[in-house]
Length: 100
Image (cartoon, rainbow, N blue to C red; front, side, top):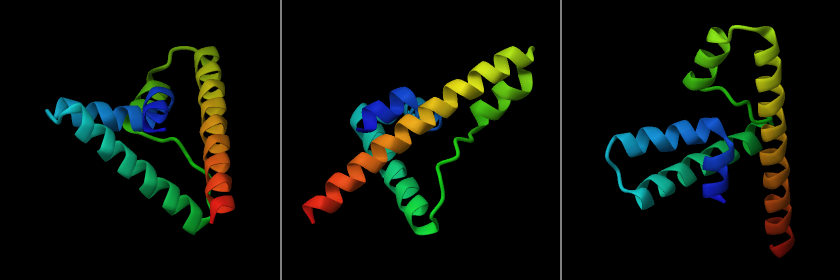
């Protein structure tokens, strides 16, 4: 699951790439990213909030975008990615809750 999140979510991808650039091995960076994902999920559940994808890479991209068309298409893409992650998390949580 962590590999999918790294591939499809820029917030976690930036975190993963930061850890890799610090010189950490692959396995350690994947576990660190999984731990961050668990912390985010726990915070979402306890605070009853939706995931908001905000990171330095995204804010920099949106402020330097030259046309509004590019901004709208990137926002739409990220919104669908957020919906995909949200649906995946709902499915995983429901699977876990049915096992308990």
